[in-house]
Length: 150
Image (cartoon, rainbow, N blue to C red; front, side, top):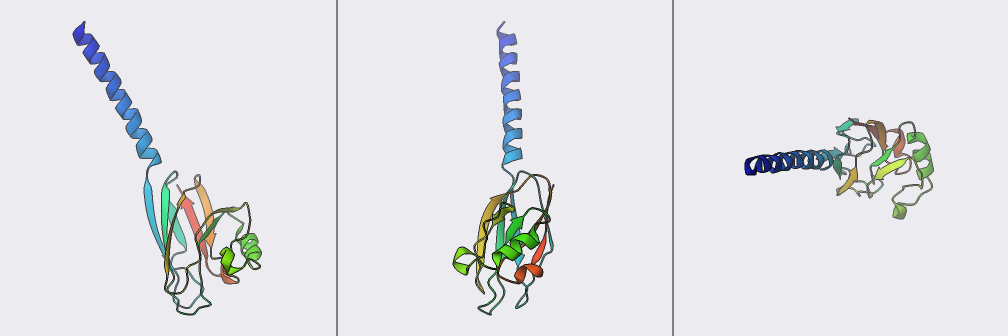
């Protein structure tokens, strides 16, 4: 009887460990992305980024510009909403981060001033293709890319 009970307890503990390890692995994946502006231009150095679904994403945004007019940010939006969000940002002042109130926005960074690096963390959205842009007025036409969540 004792041998059966020991095996049963061992099997239950093993199953519990497998379930716990699977849950921790799935929800705790962390990804670090680096994105930078290209000198004095309105461009990101990467047009495509990819992350796993369910991951915690830390994005490091480096502003390589020197001109005070070249503040930049990273705004993640639903696919097809770049124009809408970019146009709405035209009237939002810098002290509000040039980030409009819009349901299509999924994540956003603070503004980075020339020579500054900002780091922020967000949860990856469900699998799909999303778009990102800089919402400093006028920048969204050129400073944009896609984030693929797999």
